[in-house]
Image (cartoon, rainbow over all chains, first blue to last red; front, side):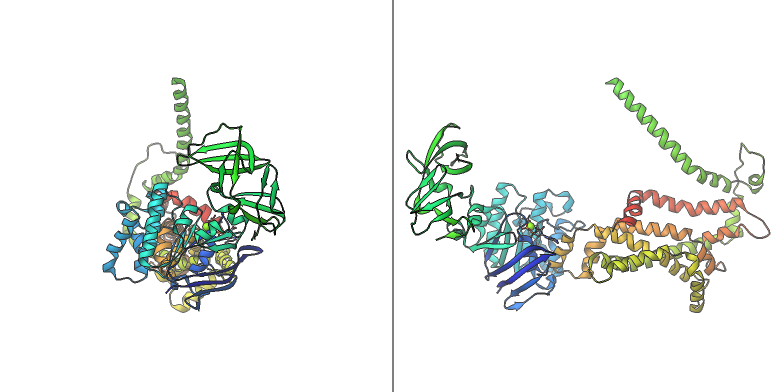
Length: 348
Length: 280
Ligand SMILES: Nc1ncnc2c1ncn2[C@@H]1O[C@H](COP(=O)(O)OP(=O)(O)OP(=O)(O)O)[C@@H](O)[C@H]1O
Ligand SMILES: [Mg+2]
């Protein structure tokens, strides 16, 4: 069993809030992803779970027991550090073996476990090297191997794949997911990468400036964002957000007019529409100048300029249009999200 | 192209000339000492300039045969190495505590340790004499070890602390989450990472110890505890007058090992002397 609760966690440095009002229950065997922009408190949250940082206020509870004040050594977490934190005087082999030695795992098992972990991260050829003689991506994989070499109470992974190329990253993603499912170990995973978040997570926690914005499954986060921040953070390209006025079911802003929206709402709002919910059409809600066109192979991204706003549209892969000409797109009114213009909160 | 290479060769020549003369300037006293040590006594005190020196091992034989130089040398070596060992055993945990834990008065303690270095030796000389006398340690190598260790402890602690401060905190965090105790972290992570600092601090401590004179004179009264530096003083008194060539030779012998060690680790040493002393 490994159920972790964060109750009302705050972390302050002087007057600066690194993390504030975090309430979060991480379920047993859950794969939880922390997602948010740089400096939003992801690492700090992790470090508090690991016991490397004490919360200024609030309780951390593991399996019903408050663990505030319990030393990191006694919490039995395995952490991949953002900066790798490999021991420079030890070889990769010794680095991976270190937690086994410290945790008094029978020495007869060490060799097999170290080699298996190294194999999982494709580092078998580099076991005799010192960290200084590894590339950034190899160091990162060594750090990952050092975490997965044992079966801890919880895995904490702070951007463990950020330095790998796309192909290796995809492979490692599959490996991590496989290991986590096989060992059934509760995992907290930090990333900037949305694909990683969407593919790995049972639930995603979106953070901003130290506070949680939304907790939900990848589907919920994607299809049911709680506010403009989450809506604008998730998706690639992210949701288009346009400020304007809503009256009698009609939204209007410079160059845009959309009918058929709920008429019980009104006032200053922001509408959100995902690029894939826009279609290029002869008749539509928005006619504007073509500002950019990015064919990627399987899809073409079209950027339109309406006033000072850029609208992203996912168009068919064969769609081509000269820059500077006009294009018209239609939105699916059922797929339009409404947010309060002042607070950014979702209007339902 | 040719002109450019010529210019570069020229500037290189100039650089070597400057460095060469500087080296000569620094080494001249040492070589002069060696030459004094290797010449007969009569020749040294002759007021006439001598252009063709006669080499002689007179002083060499004298220091080994007429004086218990081997014993002095042994005393020096034991006292110095013993003191450095004591310093390291005390300084490494002290530096670890000063660099890693937060507690009230930590910086004051750190400054206090350093401030012992600023004390004038004369002030503590008399109390130290009485202390060792009551302890029955006068005229022993043990007393020398303790005094040398005490003199150098602050500097050694400070240098090692500065190296420890350079170790990223994440490294220790990783070791702690991996399950290592503080002692394990110190032994397996910190110490291997600061070996250059430990060597630097040790060498600096050795240099100070080998040159220490006042306290050694105070403690040592017989060849039991005489060291090279005090032995030197023996050649200045007595019925024979000043024995310059023996003095020069002993000084040279005391200088050579230090010089070799310094050359071997000079890269670390400059860092230890500047940063180690200044930082934090
Ligand atoms: N020891 C500290 N003292 C003061 N402020 C700190 C300290 N550690 C972190 N912070 C601040 O707390 C905030 C959150 O930091 P944290 O490292 O958790 O961010 P993060 O979400 O992990 O960012 P990134 O994605 O860039 O790693 C940052 O603004 C950071 O400057
Ligand atoms: Mg971080």
